[in-house]
Image (cartoon, rainbow, N blue to C red; front, side):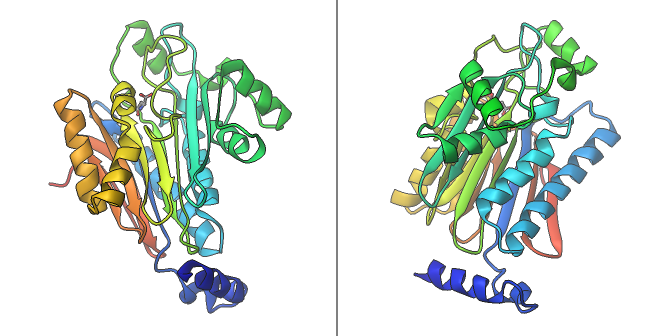
Length: 320
Ligand code: ASP
């Protein structure tokens, strides 16, 4: 009911200067750019990551401030990060053991539990756009590889050649069979709009030197991504095999929904459990009021949060 009233207010004030002060308190967006070590990075790279997170958070937030939905905000923020080679998603995706890219992505609409996902796609510029297209325009949730790429063509989405992803440094990491997560991260966004809708999305190139065909948690609804109005939204990053086995994103929301835990406590419990299994990773989450959790068991997780027009929190390493 509250959301219907809010929606009416938003519609009423949309073209009015009053709009900007009418209902902005619940709008919030939280973003991650991967969990890991973020060591041996140049100052320039660190600054580039921080700047991109800032831009993505501002852009998604502003979209919602102007009356846009959380789904649009999630897609817009992820596209910004997919286009930036500093992240392991879209353009910056890491190489498989056969020295090419295979990308995974998913998006979920908390208002109706609709979801779309793609796995092992090689030539779509923005995998998150394809995930959304699948959610909205097909009867299915998840497509992989050639089938997904065929839909991208039908949808008129931009495709690219392998040179678009070229990175000498990442190529060498794959050639040297470095099996760890790339130091450059998966990206994820969770947003709450003024209508009370929560959306979440995640996009990744997966893990460096992964076997061709390997699919991580990022495109798996419940593992890497979950959104449910009135409860929470979550996007994860880390050792995908463990995120799948623990169903991390859904598990956090289940703890909140049935055990009535707050978002930080719920996320901490699940991230601690990952650690006890030997897995590295982190999550970002929002509860129904836009309260964020940014929890990780690695030395760092690139992250940003915004819930007011004049400040954006951006941090990579742990608090002092
Ligand atoms: N979770 C991703 C995967 O396993 C990788 C990452 O987040 O770093 O594919």
